[in-house]
Image 1 (tube, rainbow, N blue to C red):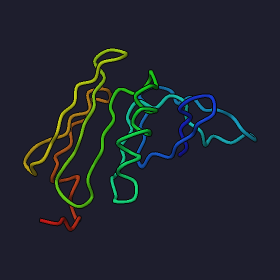
Image 2 (cartoon, helix red, strand yellow):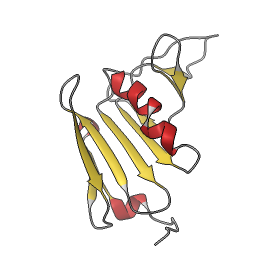
Image 3 (tube, rainbow, N blue to C red):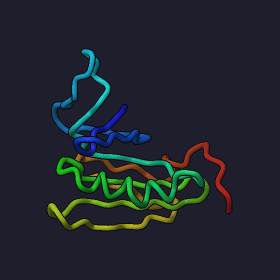
Image 4 (tube, helix red, strand yellow):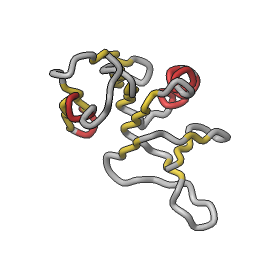
Length: 124
């Protein structure tokens, strides 16, 4: 699903969740552009990591509805979690052990890291 991040920019996150009612920008009577994401998750790859951690992250964190932004490595156990504290402050957490958990307070969800990486062949 496409997400509107400002008046002229749209992005395509890997996973998006909304707490409450989804709000859409309507184009041709379709519901494909979300304007109020609560959680955004990106799976990092060699070709997208720089953009996902750079400009795209800036755009997401500028959205007032985004409360949790998560970046997940697909090659090794490594998760970066940004949780909004105030409009301009974020709590940054790194998760790098399989026995840890990722908690997304905005949607009241806790996920075991081993479940995130289930059936994924990681590089040592």
